[in-house]
Length: 324
Image (tube, rainbow, N blue to C red):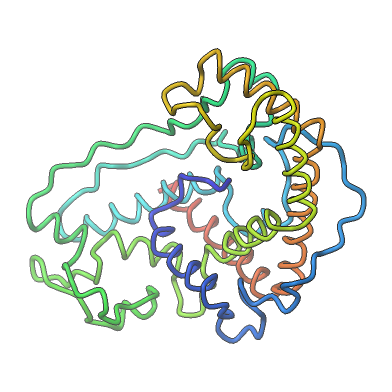
């Protein structure tokens, strides 16, 4: 449901999002409730009229403007590679794994609520033609000093390493020296991440909007209206001879991973989509999820507005790096 091609910094940022989700902490100083701290956790939001929907590929969500989309993620990936290379050049090395942003990259929500495209079901069954992803760049061969500059020291993860570029420039924690020059904690990989995603101590976690989105999705999935629509879809499948369907987004029962595009899977998938249409599962789920996202925006407007502002600044920096 969310892009699998996140920038390297997302690896570190996702840990912060997970902590927010588990603890319900707020962003420092914003006075707002963070993910998991919903004061109306037991109250389901009003949704109004539910539109009839089936295909989910191009659905729009209220939280989308507050986090990087697939095109922006590709631009940020490229910009981070430029920063890594700039850092490596200070020590006489070059970083060769440079990616190029795809200007045509788009968000694809086609499997957000499970298979819902009739043409795709008839053509491919449950097999996902988009699941392969782009080819991975070849790992460059590095000598010991080059590897040290790129990755930094192997250190105790409990060490209080700097969490922003602003702090890193004033800290010697987990640093080392190569060729008479200080190598920052985490090497050029971490420095590039901090420069692009966390330049100052007050930077909002770039994954915070995605954290609110993950929470909204999870709450919508458990919402009584979505539960009822899911049960109706499951009953529809059972009526057509396909018992055991309880999760619209899960593995189809009785179909092996290697047979997702088989004739049997195509027949089953075609009926699956037909039952989603009959019960309007996608329309209900989407409408409910949007309501939870709207609630998150209303309760965390200050944090999200700051996240949007910092995303815009990040993209401007990335544009200058692309041009360099």
